Image 1 (cartoon, rainbow, N blue to C red):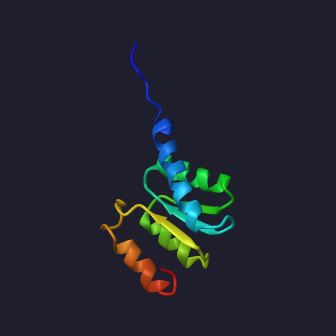
Image 2: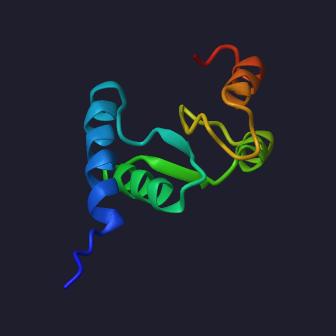
Length: 104
């Protein structure tokens, strides 16, 4: 019989660990933009944060993140996968910082 490992069982602990770390520096109710091209990771992180009282918006690529920011949405925190298929490494982070210099 083959062993089956649920990706959720792998990603879940990562998201929970992230939420514990984030819990030390964030208060519930903050708006968080989660940007990751891996749907399971994005969902797990977003779900874990939402369960802890954060307002979460998910995007799967750099263009989606830029669109969310252009729509006038303000975010207190951006959790960003720095290796997105439509963005070269940290260019999205640089773009966010240049448009929102007061938020670091």
